[in-house]
Length: 64
Image (tube, rainbow, N blue to C red):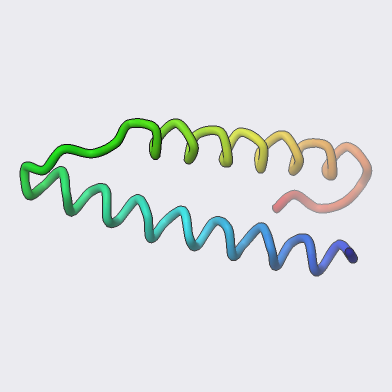
């Protein structure tokens, strides 16, 4: 996978994460319960993305 393909995939994952967060927000605003495991998975995804971005930055590739 090329760097550009990786960046596209990561951005698609980020857009999906934003959509999920919007749904979670709507549920919370409506007084509905949410599954906290979803938030755990989102945090894990974001941590991996940040760690990967920092690694690329150290290799001389511009951060995501």
